[in-house]
Image (cartoon, one colour):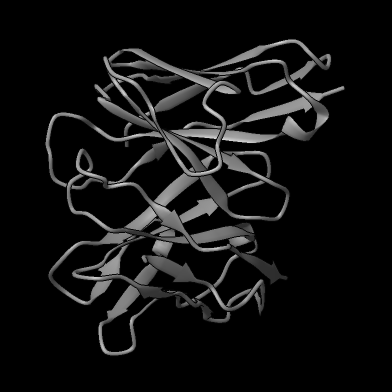
Length: 117
Length: 118
């Protein structure tokens, strides 16, 4: 079965420091990986995705993620955190490359990021 | 990016009544839309996959007669919570993918609907 794990319920970071939000996955076949951010009472906003190619993926708002096949990880990173980055972050995996052939998203449990001034 | 509009943003209804939530793709065609349910501080649980012009595919454990899904056009899917009860109170979110290509693209999410059943 496909699954995603975010081992930390909460991550606390001081503003200006680098941040990492961890994600590991389990899929059969090639993984198609995504990061989304959710602000309170809002839907999800897309940050970045890994389909194929370079292991380091750059996304919106200065975020990036590194795909590591041997460790089955896709950690989200940012060199310098902002207070406005405080939100709920979700890692997701899709078991199929084709959206119309079962390409639904399976989400991790979410990680609450808190950036303090 | 593409825009998905969900309406209403919040709704309060009496127990036993039905509530309809709309999900629209504003600037692209979405042959497939997804409906999720989210409990406080928890992840998104996929309820069903809505396919334009055909029946929705429900995830295991989701009551089809309770959560009616209609995908009548390439830009609109609706979720109707029938005979709502307080335990149906939750945050419901829809998402859609651009249907112009078959390869995987990121899903775009609506802003969510906070349903409270009293």
